Image 1: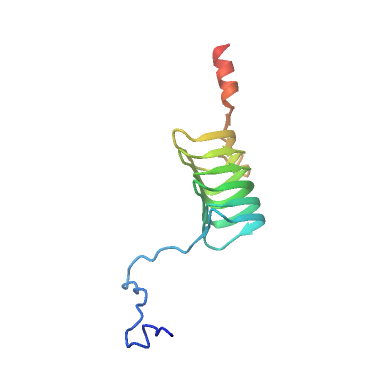
Image 2: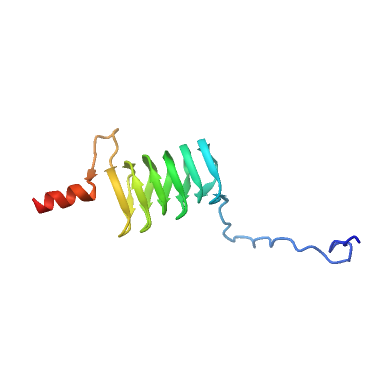
Length: 154
C-alpha cells in the first residue's frame, strides 16, 4: 500500500557530484520556457535564455541574454552580451557584443561595440557601434529588402 523510499530500504540517494578543486564551474542560467508569456519589466542577476514570449523591457546588465529559436520578444533589451536566435522587435543594447544567428529576425536598432551577424539573419534597423561620450561613432544604416532592391534596379 505504501511505497518505501530508497533511504528506508537502506539505499543512499545519489547526490550531485562535487566539482574537483580547480575545476571550472558552470554559470547559473535561468530559462523562460516556450509556453511562458511574460509582460512587464524583466531583470535578473544570472544568465538568461528566453524560449517563450516577452513583452515590455529587459534590463539584464552585466549578464548574458539569449533569445532562443522559439523566443519571441517585443521589448527593448539591455544586457552585457545578447545572442538572438528567435524574433525580437525593439532596440538591443549590448555592452560587450550582439550576435544574430542565422535564424534571427530583428526589427529595431542595435547599439554595441561588437556585432556578429550570420548569413541568413534578417535585420531591419540601424547599428551604432560607437560611443557617444567619445564622439567616435561608426554607424551603419541597414535598409529593408525592398529599398535595397529598388535602389539596385534603378
